[in-house]
Image (cartoon, one colour):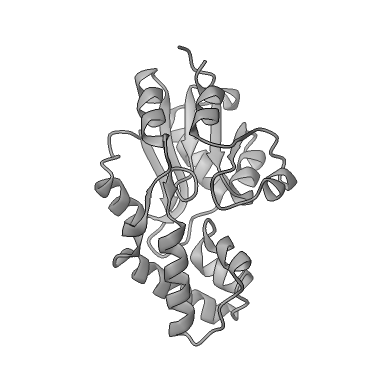
Length: 218
């Protein structure tokens, strides 16, 4: 076997973890707490991926100050236990293991705040799987995808972007890869849409872990 990319950057929610149930449950609880009307299901689904305070403002339509408070409440509630609803997408643990065995450098590049990311790394025993973790600060700031990608590449000493790839499921992942000139693979089993990713320049997609494997390991 051989690697098509030597450095592989991973989004978490919707790419490694099927975490939508916990995130959407937290969003429902947060909007109920603030007395805010819940968006229709298709819009609510878009909460998976972006920083929570941005979702409450841009998707739910909350005023900026309320959205900031809602994001803080959301992060605390999610960390209190709703993250435990997450599970691996089929085939992803095996793919991560095989990439490691072939010598790939692996990093997380996720907008998930660090406390929630650390809880999931503990629960799923993933600390030794990844070489670096680029994520948002505990308050949800610092989660801009281009900055996360650059941090990961710098930390791993990868100075040739053509040797790296970003894997994600949303327009934010695709735009981050485009803005940093890093190849991108969009996964279609997550929570974004092919159309949204294509609008941000994505051209390569995988329907499941099997297709993703064929794009990463020859």
